Length: 214
Length: 305
View (tube, rainbow over the protein chains, first blue to last red):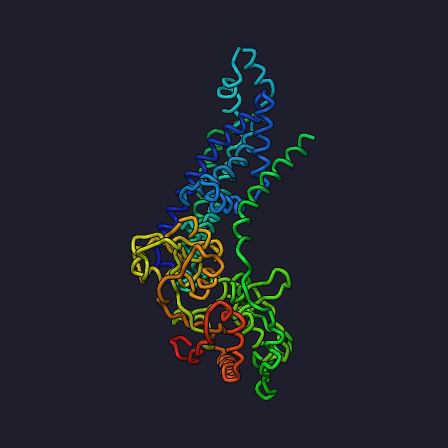
């Protein structure tokens, strides 16, 4: 246990980086995912095609491949950002595909009559999406979105492979000095579990508050 | 049809990305070295039947007919799998084969790809018999595992891009961003020599070299032998100064197995006196380091061994 307790500052710094990665990339993923969903249900064929291609591309490539390509490949064509920034952008774009799919299933759950009624009232596509469809869609997908959040939290550990010193990288470094892998990685695992448990608790509360009874 | 077109477009995009990345890697020539472990070990010593004590670890290995080694598959010159032949080549790999020959009579090894997170556990639970993996002997580690050897002594050096000035010794790294291999002894060594340096780590040696060339850091700290090999492959980087640490590599064994430790140390003495150690060095590390094989370190000479 002392292997963990002696290195709490390192773990804490790593945990902060993991939280930054998680919060920033989830915010980015939510914004991009919302746009992609709007494109997927829009009446314009080109937008639907682009958004479908986006989702298929990012869902069918492993995140680690994307991270390595972005970190080592993009500088070759002159695009270079910091390691943390690169990781946030890549994870956000990747998870946006999953958020878009969750949101789309929510949109599909809203009955067609709702959209028709909105149109009959004279609302434009954007208005009906914003005021009628999405508020109902979001309520049905709180739990799936929570799952995406948890998966995203776990996926941030892949950033350790491209030089970001997150919780996983910090645990690796502590283990290098202490050679006590079991307590060190159990400690890091508990920290991840704690983040996931918090996310589960919040989504559970939100669902009870906002969930629709039909 | 739409989905077919989409798949084709996705494939095309990812191919472009992949070829852009691999293009830089494959430009470097393969690591030199003749994979002739068979000929190398033809006259390697074999233990007398009396040395294989009944009920001992060596007897268990001999009965199994295979030595299970914890090692790497991606460490150039030390333990790297040849993608063409499938053989694992290098100094650590050949030492493992020589030990297998000593116990079993045949250089039969199975390499279990282990990492610095897992090797103590792999030894403790008996998944592997020995670890040959640039395993630096430290008193902390010696509480978890037993070390035979040291069988090789190396040191960390600094590599920079060709036109870099102002970095000649580890203290110069203070306040700068330094690249190191993840899970290598370079990380604690940099922290000690230059506490104000910011360390970024990447998983493998080619990634670190790529990161250095792309200015992710001003210097790359790694085992001197590896850096010499890198600088030879890639003229845009150079090694500066002399090694600033001394890392004695040990053979990791299950903690407390003193019988096996003595047996392995006896074998090590024999390989060194018969000149086999020197030939294995010449065949691997000696292909990039100039001159004759260095004097092997004194067995049991460091704390923890």
